[in-house]
Length: 63
Image (cartoon, rainbow, N blue to C red; front, side, top):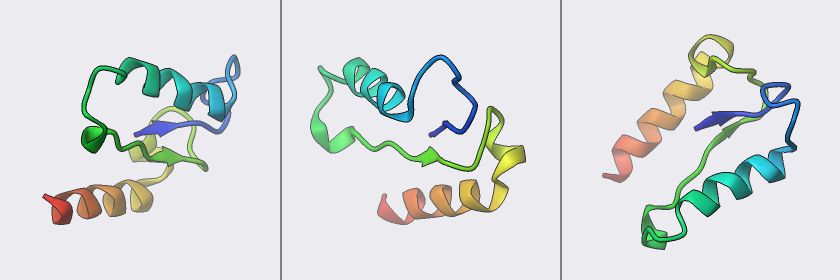
């Protein structure tokens, strides 16, 4: 998970996602799952707690 709004003024959301995808290039695609907190800055747990809890619950139910 990654906050993107103003959290990375040096990169666009698309560049941030590509950076993460590039780091997973040798990992099986089934393990690629990215969630971007569009309305958050750096600390997702403080900026978007409801969104974070929903993402965690969704992840857990998919296990």
